[in-house]
Length: 368
Image 1 (cartoon, helix red, strand yellow):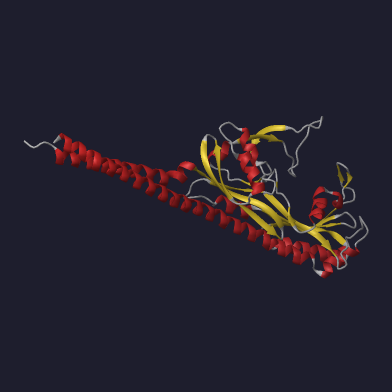
Image 2 (cartoon, one colour; image 1 turned 90 degrees about the vertical axis):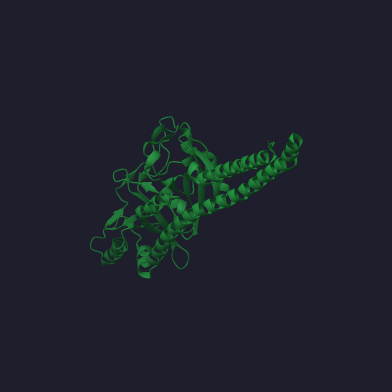
């Protein structure tokens, strides 16, 4: 009888156990792939929806700005205004142009200011204000057409989105949509645009999560921070990086070397600087990936915890922009369903094998 039991265990029990393990392994692998695909799709959908809202926001204001600054009477006035520092206090034509700037910005809470930088006089016009004569900057008297942002816009040649800046007193983040303005013969009249309050965009980013977990962020075309929610681990997180000024440019010491500081995260800080802190890495590699691929998945470690990172490029032709929106979710939250599936499947297979072997022992047990 012992021989029969051994044969049953060898020819029935062992193959059956192996078959169950193989079927379970194949089933878990297929199901794992399906669940992973569903999770990745769900996370990408969250990022995609946010991306579309950001695109719509900037597209809308780019079109508004373009329509406004190509209005014939406004364009004509700036083309014919050739005297820098002229007294315009009693000039009805200037009053009309000024009212147009006021009208553009006062009817929309998202518009901070409307501006026109003249290439003819170098003056900078905005609501009730002209910057130029008597205004001194580091390299002499202020000429708008000599400023870096003006020159950068001309190099791009189209309406574009400027990297954001933050008001140090209010914390308000803004970005300018600006572009060259030319007359009918192609002569450059100036650079015009609007300064936008990004509070509405920041709210969009703040609301992007996966099952109420994780946080999203917005980066500009240089992989620098545009917005990052201040909650959870981010509240006390600091980075070591180059000090930056109001415009996001690096600050240098007397010898010309960049000033290095440890500080809380601010607008225009590079996301790769996250790697400067202990138990945080993968962000420099992620930053590099953005140059090669606009959309995708990545893995990073943040303050000792593994995160899955889903990202998508925000690309527009008008205004020209190539920003990125990303969503970071703890890996344990993303992989939780997969790990539970694997555990319960393994437990089920072990239980079935145990039951099978018990039945064989019972059937083959010696009878009194």
